[in-house]
Length: 263
Image (cartoon, rainbow, N blue to C red; front, top):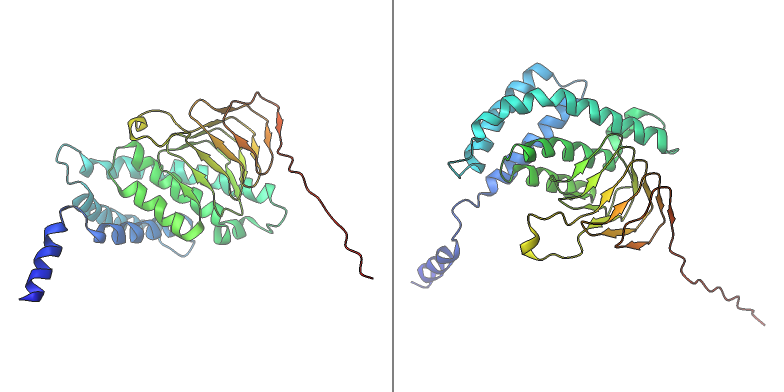
């Protein structure tokens, strides 16, 4: 009798019929297969494209509980976009290789750089986000987040030849716009000044123009904040206002060093 009471109480509070963790697991499996299909030389493209289509059909069944969303029609248009996405990811990989003296080959970037992996999954998720496919894009980028420490919302708009160095702790919000040839380092946040729910459909994250470098632990906030082209943002900068092109923005802490003599 006691167990029945507990079971009834738990069941009473399980109110959301569409919370199916199988969707999360299937999305992660789909993401892994997609990544290998695009990059792993030993993975057959033809064979796995067919497998991915079947996996996607399962995602449609699990994620598209709103009947008015034409989810089943997404796969063909998404498939047509994959060559373009791969081309852009190759540009990202070469940008990382060319800008990081620690990288010994482009192959090293593909195989071991968490920043590249996070960018790759973001670009693959972003296309589904643009098509209005529900939930799966967010689950894809959160999967990459769990692996890399990089949190890129699939709604962000990111240009070509993007470089994230060291990766861990990077946050890029949903309405962020990043142009071409931008480099950012660990701990950078491109966030919102306010997290009020009423701002859901408002641009609340910054715009980063071409050829900007943002060093470690800098925080740039606000939908009206624009960092002009060719600007360098120094480490630990807190920025909530726009910066003109060709600027150097720095934070200078006071550092005191005291030498202790031993008698």
